[in-house]
Image 1 (cartoon, helix red, strand yellow):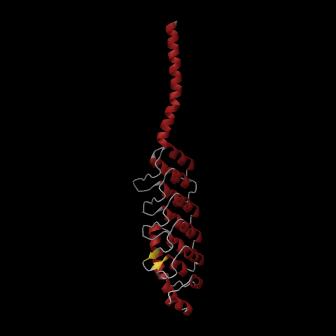
Image 2 (cartoon, one colour):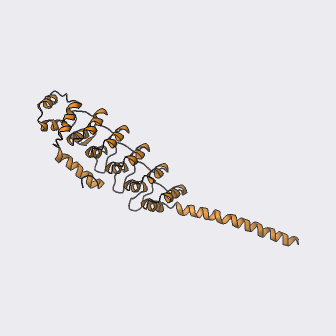
Image 3 (cartoon, one colour):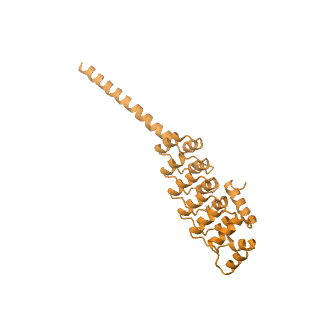
Amino acid sequence: MDALTARTRFVLVAGVALVLAVPILLFFLGRLVLSHDPLLLHHVAEHRTPLVELSLWAGADPNYRDADGRSALPLAVESGDYDVVPLLLDAGADPDTRTADGEPVAAIAVRDGETAILAMLLRAGADSNARAESGIPILVPAAIQGNAAIVQMLLDAGADPNTLAEENLSVLAIAVDRGHTEVARLLLDAGADPNGPGIAELVRQSGNIDLLELLEAGALTAEALFTLAELGLNALANLDKIIEGMLCIFTLGLGC
């Protein structure tokens, strides 16, 4: 009788242990599967937000790159996925990471006019002075587009208002040449030099006597630049079209 009781007790204990062990084992197996890094990339590419969240919870690496150089954050930014981008950033994705082609993700957000996503990246520490693979600062395409909201966002995050698109062409000159008065105003308010590279060429192209006199005196003012911007000179068209072409090649965006 005692032996039967002991055997019964053993069976009951073993049964309870098995019942408890199975879900625990399934839990850890599931977590192991979910944490598979390539699976995270797949979920991001397919916009499966809940599964992205599960993969990150399970321990998937938000900075993992596959054999083709793809990583999760650039995929999410390129597709404008407002839900997945913050999940990846909160999980530790590098806000300065680059695409497989070498473009910083902030450049992609600027190119596509994704103000909300750019704001997320900048809050997470993305470099507002980052340069595209072509070497052009990300403030330049924003000025070419005349996107005042993005220009302001970059300037607020520390972008250099005197940055050069090329050796003899400032981002301010581009804004003025394109007739983007609001962008020019933002750059000047942030400290852009009204006598910076490219401005003199614009004044000469304008043929405006008053502006030429200011130029010769080295005293161009913000008001003078707004006058130039309102003229819509497009005097630097050839030069900034070259810049635009470079941006197109490297970011598959502007002017293509």
